[in-house]
Length: 359
Image (cartoon, rainbow, N blue to C red; front, side):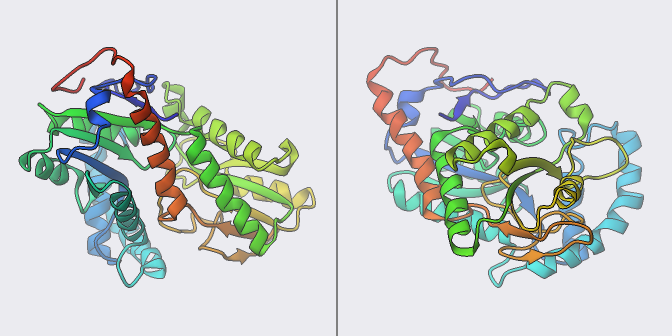
């Protein structure tokens, strides 16, 4: 079951267990209830200027980069943004859809699917960075009379760099509202089942390959050393999905991608795992990125490439990218199954009510 709780202000706080913050009321079907599906963010256009604005906001969040601002801001604006924005814009342009950024398109479609399943709620998509901005969305809901709010960060595995950043902003903007934040669903049965079924279906259509690689977004090792539970949550997710697929330990691996800078990041890296698989004789494999429910397809320097593509990397095994859940019906169903379980529990007395405020 996903973990829901009040928002913590601790920079390195791990998610608590299910905390019924006005749970009976918040889970009921009422017109003053809203669900906000929050994703990381995206530029408004595949241009250097738009990417620079987006990266400036993203990389200025102290949850993301903990370097003191007096040291970080000159480096960010004087070197990193001028160099990185044009290169990133070119990569965005390769995957940009007619409707816009893939991340935004899939997040909006997921919100539409959730709205169809929750006709008495307001369901809105939002981005932590970029547009539609989470802060503006929360203010709109509060001004519109919404009293009960469920915030669903589209990050199954809790991290202080993602989920906690959403929690910070929610705490600032929802005073007087009854709020439930879904902090972690890394091993939720509905989510695991939906991911496993999507992999199973892909392998039936395109071939199973000899090995399945779960490639997660990376973090600096110092973040994990500081108490962030993200690596364990990633391992829990991969283990649960592999078990649902009936895979033996030798048939799957876990890796981390999307590194930045020179400091040590989580290991093993996706590139090193691909090298190891090739050296061990694996000739074809599949790669799944279970970090985000909806995400932009990208190539992080030799890891997983665009949807449904198999590509050879020198000295590495050919790799087929298995798409994320995105706006698949099973994706929306998984969350609604959890909501139904919450509604079924409303006959039990709620414990620890904390009306009207977060944290």
